[in-house]
Length: 224
Image 1: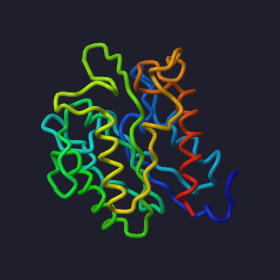
Image 2: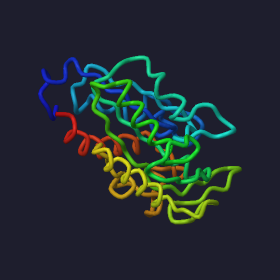
Image 3: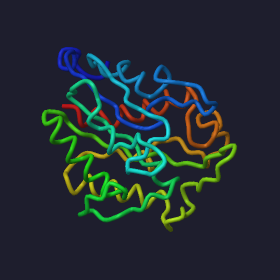
Image 4: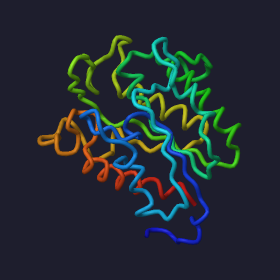
């Protein structure tokens, strides 16, 4: 264990995210048991780690689904000492407008982040909030045509623009943000990337384990 057992023995962490938190293995299978969340207690002796990942979930409201972060953040059925929020790739891939840092429009990326950040702070006042930017993507989807990290989506933005927007609003509120977009150590643009990211976006069991190591390395700085 990296940190003292007694300090964490009563601590609970809620992990709130999309398919990468749920544990999608890129073949239509997977689940919480292979997610990066399933490895956290191997390193940090938390009492419990709860997985609130939903495949395809965006941070902002959209017309074709009802499972956005804005709609779900009050539905976590357990209070927690730590809440880790990991999302945004589906907003980029599905052309959510970026918006501005001072708005509260739930249909824009920054507006929705504003709502989620302030809502989590109000609803879970004793929890420490930590955000994580989504990792790079080059999605080889069977039917959909999605931009990779360095291409522009229909709003004219790259994934880096969404990453920078998340970092900016987290810094605005002095919330720690782990920048996995730039420092995850795993990329679909590397040779032999299929070992960790079979479809260029989701992870294999080995990929989730490697991602968990990287997350823990950053996460422990914000837990005490």
